Picture 1 (spheres, protein in one colour):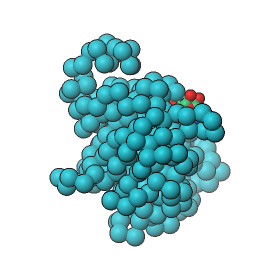
Picture 2 (cartoon, protein in one colour; picture 1 turned 90 degrees about the vertical axis):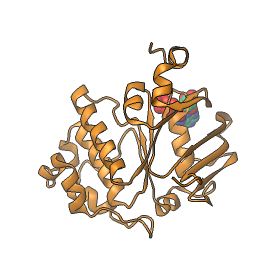
Picture 3 (cartoon, helix red, strand yellow; picture 1 turned 30 degrees about the horizontal axis):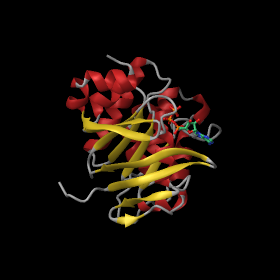
Picture 4 (tube, rainbow, N blue to C red; picture 1 turned 30 degrees about the vertical axis):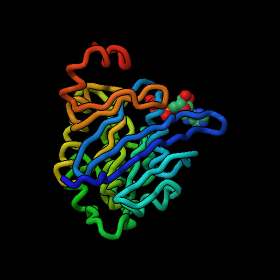
Length: 239
Ligand code: ATP
């Protein structure tokens, strides 16, 4: 494994107007890893992802991707670098078909990244293949999540930032989404996963960062976090 992280966040502070949300937040993701950012509602998880992809600008600190400073890039520029943000609300186009949703995402991404063709993406997501001509609005919550992930693949992502992909899904669909995340990772996609559900993190992630009130308060492998009842209880209330 290379020692230089794929994504490196150093002492980032960010927020909304006068409201400071992230406080000297640092985390890193190595190529090929699944890393989770886990924390309670309102802890700053989505704000972290928004800062990375350039939807909001950090007020201080640096974010580097493949060694290049991306702190001040906006959201269209980070997509070009190979980063894809799959937001919690998924943001698919409900009036367009599944295939049309994928065609809109097919704009190339990073020049040196092999993006998935629409056909390859549909092969990976059996449910979507069957519904390729159906409108986005006809998909279930789990299928919409898969379409949002498929769009990121077709768009040429090599780091996918997933914001609570299991939120609001029935338990058997949660497992399907987790299987997809594992398969993506096996195919070489690096994942930064934001979750409130620590069980999903423990099952999927190589390493976990725990965020509380905009600060990283713990970092550990899934085995370490699972064994740390004090931390689980204090920050997540799940022992
Ligand atoms: P959730 O699971 O609720 O999304 P989160 O950990 O992702 O939680 P954030 O969405 O990053 O948390 O929110 C962190 C803080 O920033 C919260 O106090 C929230 O109210 C505030 N916040 C989020 N978005 C905005 C915004 N657009 N304007 C002002 N404050 C915001």
